[in-house]
Image (cartoon, rainbow, N blue to C red; front, side):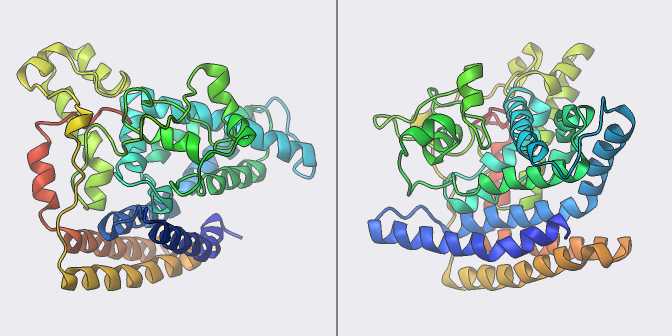
Length: 372
């Protein structure tokens, strides 16, 4: 079965858990959902899966080539220990990909999509990038070199991804000993926070022990609630712009830099780094957590209905596309994908048409490269 088809089968579970989380939050008086934000987050997840139809074959193909021609040995795919060790090793590689996603600007440009939501709930878990394939595959090549078969790599990667869904919630508190060993909701809330204390912490996918080993662990504190989002807010419901925002900011700084080494450093340095000449001519204000305001343009009742109904139709189209994509020609795949992108863009317009204007006005005054 194709990986995309597994996601299709898991979608009712995802949506059912979102419904349960919403009901629990409503009963507790701690609702963490907004319609516009949830539609944007789930829509970005849909877009990521659609783009994956065109990129996953390349990334798995590169892994397979290295495994076939550069592996030290080839491990048996029918041995249970290969799967167990493979899952742990994949999670170790994921830790470093995730960490570099916060420590290198060009990798942050892809990963930022997952952090742009200023809410924190299960819909945030579905908010995924469409450009992570550009460099992410590099971090898993050690698995190929050590001989883990492509099937093992693909399946344990899906397991690692699916595990991380449930940790994106504010409705589950601390879990005692479990929090000390595994990525859990409390640990991952810290990871999504922009507070100084929490910034760039808790990268583990399944295991949090990597963070404890490599000095990136931070515990959630009752006296400092997490503030979610990024330090350079998106301020738009446009799914295409969500994927391009930081790339555009980096390209502008690179173009404006006078020194050629700085033009390259802009992409490789930690997010937020800017050449001195660029920072002097195009300054950006320092981040102040006390001035954070959520992007929440008003939606009329008609706009809510239009956005919701169109979104449901698009979800059906995406699920259908993912199920049959492997049987379609490239032209048919591109046609489906372009139609879905256009529909998701329209949902964003219904969710708050002034979003694109606000985002454009914000580009010169906020640090869109600062990590969270």
